[in-house]
Image 1 (cartoon, rainbow, N blue to C red):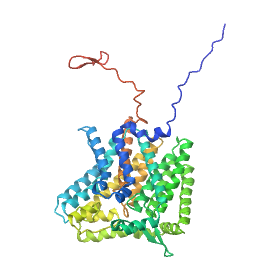
Image 2: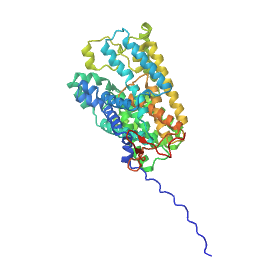
Image 3: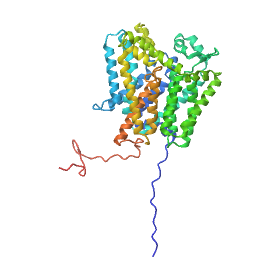
Image 4: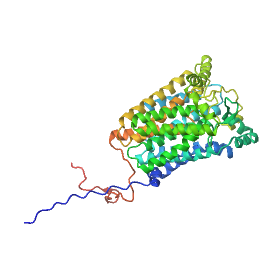
Length: 487
């Protein structure tokens, strides 16, 4: 009797890991037109300052907005009439309240003229619309990670460009163009030795926007780098990308960016609980500060050493708030849309002839000048529900493949809340769009995961079989007998 032999079951081969090009372009498979338009708009946002300086024209000023409007219109038409563009939930309700207040302030007879108020309406509301854009565009994990890779690539490019930006070059341009000089005069500061130092702004409209954007991109990079399923070659490549971005952020001289980056790294370290975030990333930041200090003859170390002085941190945030507080003590309901001059293009200021602006440094001061107590309460509620929603989704998506997306999206919203008093992280270009877009992405993926409809990647049209077409009759399709409902 011959012995019976058993063959072990043959397991299907593991799917090949996607290449770097496939990961980078993954977002295009989920709708190339809309995603390509958004990617192009983000790219323009990273080079917005450079484009405006070299091609000064009103059309160029609004180029970033125009591309996003195309994407917004396409998504609005695709979603269907029965689906609200503003996503459901507490963040969506807070945004509706903000839009309602902005509309009321637009029609009330305040001091600023209508054109100024309309421009200010764009500033306060336009970036927040990308919350709905991110929600309705998001389809799968590969798509969102593709945007992360795009941001890292852009961050490296603008960082390298900033390394070659010299004070002599900027001073020469300032001497040739008075408008350029007025825009970048604050990019220079004096160290304790009296020597003048330049805050690098690279291709952005300001050094603060440059540093703040890089801080957020570094968080996206660290989230990918620390992902448990990230291959070693990808981790090493991303770590190499973090180095020039960190160095560029230090050259920007943005102390708020360093503080917010530290908060984001602490959040990632708490969430991941691994040695990469506790040791390697902080070491890279310290090394970048040391190298930048040598390059600036100690000025960088002196400037960033002030982040440990609580008194300086307090006054840097108190001064913008005090300007708004002084204004609402006499105007409790604010001065109307545009009173702070926020988001008013220079060409529009000249065209309207309006000059009665109350300037405030930081969005919280501008908010109080434009809307008074009403705006302070409404936007404060929006920030609170945004942080609460991010925290809830972090807990919901922990130990799931979506944790890599949830982590930087929630961290960057928290970082923007910290930078809100002295900067413009929720409304600026491109940081404001990034913050709201990925918060919408986070909510969409959390909703899909809760419903069990989440997918990691888009289906491949080359391998996905099309459903069999039913038999066609004269004016209708004949349903299949097996699927026809029984009477």
